[in-house]
Image 1 (tube, one colour):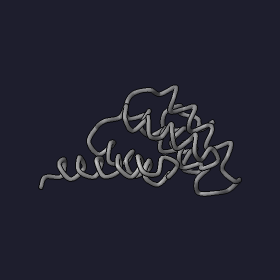
Image 2 (tube, rainbow, N blue to C red; image 1 turned 135 degrees about the vertical axis):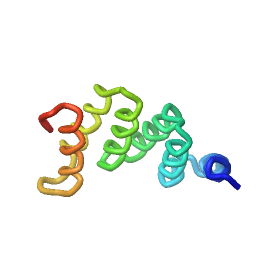
Image 3 (cartoon, rainbow, N blue to C red; image 1 turned 120 degrees about the vertical axis):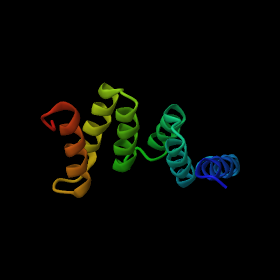
Length: 111
């Protein structure tokens, strides 16, 4: 089975898991990653949007969604997500540093 076929099969499994447990964030997270691996950025964004709704305090959801926006060329949306992650991450945390580095990469200043 090719890598693409494995990702497609995984996405179908995650679809079923979400159908059975629509509030389970881990299934959305895994499906978003599989969708990214297949190059389906728009569908990955949909999953990250759902994750943000389910877990609005999870900083990684903003960082990951920002990364998808960045890869898709939506720099303003990526910037907004990285800034939201910086606002929510604890001072001095690795997550805050990660979000700042990503923001700096696209804006030049990390703010």
